[in-house]
Image 1 (cartoon, one colour):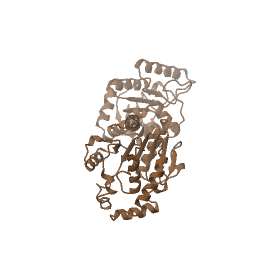
Image 2 (cartoon, rainbow, N blue to C red):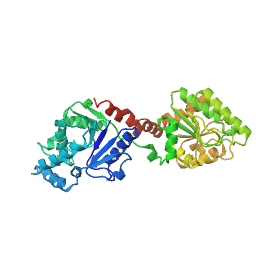
Image 3 (tube, one colour):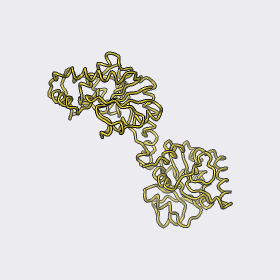
Length: 416
């Protein structure tokens, strides 16, 4: 499946559309699909590794000939060299898209910034030279109060408000879908909606090691992530954490428990406790939901040796600090979680009472797993921040959008 992505410009040019194209190309390449990026401006070094880059200078909306033509077009006059410009771009594009299964065109079919390019693409469509055309429509000149004065009835301006049956149209929101449907006088269902996404690795400032860990533990797919940055000792009451995880899972909550501290390999009691936790984890059926990620010795499933700096990254990734300890000399994680604004669920250890005060949600170390699970769920249901975080993590990461929307759009042939 060969895909070409077209726009006026590409990175290092900075812009919202350029950033979206960068993400789309990276996702396709990561899934093993070849990508060719075609634009008037850009640099291969700034594009994702593995992407091919074809530069056609006249595609750039800032190309001197295009700027001159656009000035006349905005005044309502078709330039004398419009057909020559269109033919030149058409010829270069025909060679560039040869053999492509999909051609994704960003904004060119709805914005007036390079009408010779728009006309050239329409001609290639008319000749059947584009196998599967996807118009990714971020903005629309004809419906914009700012841009509307720059277009006029007739050719070539009407190309920007003409619906074509041989094009799959995509907008970036339901609002834009309704707006474009009104412009095209077509049913909204004829236009697909694919939202923009976010890359958690960028927002969380994850290292390469952190990205691998998040993927291996499946943290981006979780509804709720509990963090325990503690050593594996009986005082930490990790068995309750495993039981709470099982209780949450039984309530259809996609839960992850991350324990980052190791047992002491030289302390037989610690090692015996650690192995008892592994047995309990297996008995409860939460091997995939709970990970010991700073363990010593051989690592099994969901057990990974990590460096200390990665613990700081986990504070940003996880939803809740969970401290069910029987006893603590102090409880440093309370300070660390509080500093970044992380919700804290803790037993009555000194740091939770003296420092956390009313800002820490406390429970008894003797509480049942179901009681603690309900306490956490009550918070999650009533926290707008947590509800939004869950929704974005589930539906609006680039990986989720690629899997659920972009890839089916290509592999399904773009039917709507």
